[in-house]
Length: 275
Image (cartoon, rainbow, N blue to C red; front, side, top):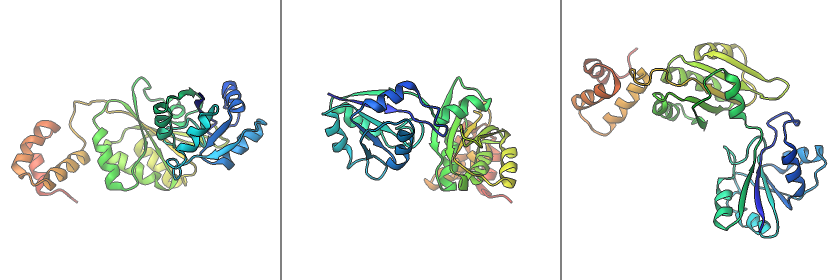
């Protein structure tokens, strides 16, 4: 019976790979890679010659039987393009299938962009919540952020360069002007970590064109028992109105939950989009 190894690979700097990871990659009978061309460069650099098959978002279900068949003959390694596999990369379904089929699954830890950004952000690391990529649409992004706005945990997100500014603006409007660490190109030549308030990050990337992949580390709610942010209040009111609840009923219930006065909540209900 083979073992499925989940092997973390460098997120930029090729030196950031463990001796154990190199040994495992050299000893398995097959490597399932998110992008075989990308992984081949890494293997060639370390003179590792092992068969590769692609395992990515668009073939991850059809490839399951192929990988399970390979596991019946020997060990298999799963790698993503960068960092720890199965973390915002294909792998969850494969891990589940391998476990259900009775195969061992073993992590080979190593680089991880979210953790690297967190520990260098200057924000609390004792309790954090990793939420992956923010939703593409602003309305969905704001709704998701409203759901975590009261949490005291440091929040970690991934974002693409073309959505970065809009994401930062939504973060500020929903969460308030919190401390943030914006990390880009981690471990690479042009590594940059911008630290400060969300408003300062917005100013910075308004004048500096965002490039590379970004990890955002945002401070948690320092006063979780305090009043809701205004944007969260409006989102909750809109949601309850859409259910057909009466304004008087909504005002009474939301005032009790949000820390806002009933009169203010009622005024916002009657004027949800002030100018």
